[in-house]
Image 1 (tube, rainbow, N blue to C red):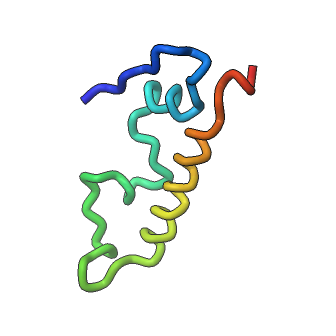
Image 2 (cartoon, helix red, strand yellow):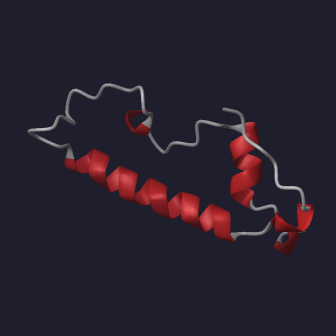
Length: 72
């Protein structure tokens, strides 16, 4: 599915713009859904992967909180 841009430009966030330009906004390749990490398995989850995933979530939330209107 494609990304749908918000109708009101005043509501645009950095996340909206970045998502349109770069739909694969991941800190590391191992966070991509199709990536098969040898170190991140069910019986032995990778601690680095879990930490990067936590940081990825924070990054996305912060980008969603930042209106472009405040930056211009």
